[in-house]
Length: 351
Image (tube, rainbow, N blue to C red; front, side):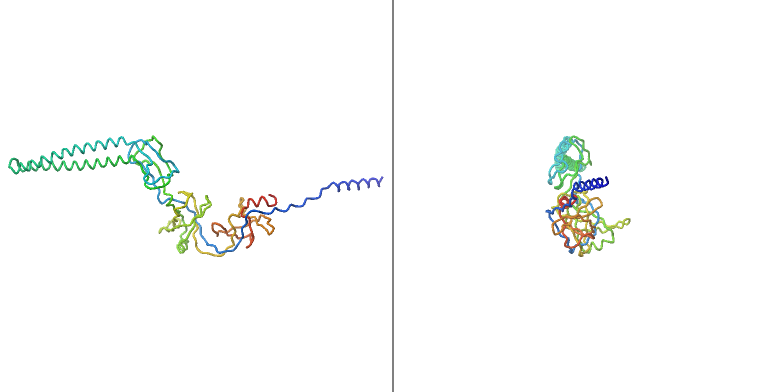
């Protein structure tokens, strides 16, 4: 009985051993076929950064100068307007009638002037013949001069009426983009009411505020770049102007940075970041395209000699340019990193 029990136990152990599947070997990571870049040490410009905002040097709001109903609107927000193009019209019937009345008054005054001139000439002849007194001639002369003055005044009034009529047509003072429309077709316009606002996209600049302690270093080199985070673009500055005044409360100074005329995709009010060059030094740099940010983790996919990618956490610095950024820890010079981290992550283990 004891031997049978031992045999059954041995048989059960053998069956259990035969039924166990061998443990699977961990799969090797797939090779990365994406582009790679090299971590390298090179000289980079040291910069100090400041928050900034884009503004237009030329930005205007065209307002009504006469009262009347808006009868024509030719442009809307986002449209480009050439200089001199009509952007809106106001009903001009009232000012046209006022102009016609002024013209009629001028003609009446000119007729009275002709009569006064003739009367004055006759009075001079009659005085020479001793038929009238000197006082009568003086009266005729005064009437003549008064008629002249009235014609001059009415001509000025007619000119003002004609000018006021021209205010019914609102034209663009320069070429630009419409950024706001303040009225709708059929609404009543009054003197001073805004009609449209526009800006010239070829005259954009960036306004940054920097601490006074950094002004000397910024002025010494006089170079800067503008980063537009919303577009992922860097733009060279064509001109820098340090405003010769400071805010006594915040101890900061305003710096104006003019952008090239060909810059597209930016408009007034867009947030930007100004990077002022204050020197240069060698730094360990990693391509910006390789950096992967997930919540509080900053990492890259490091590619080994066999083309396998492994995720590695890194710590970045503040130096760099539009293509590379300083890395303080986690990488060594000469290591390769994937420039398409999402694609490399799909091929890495655990993806």
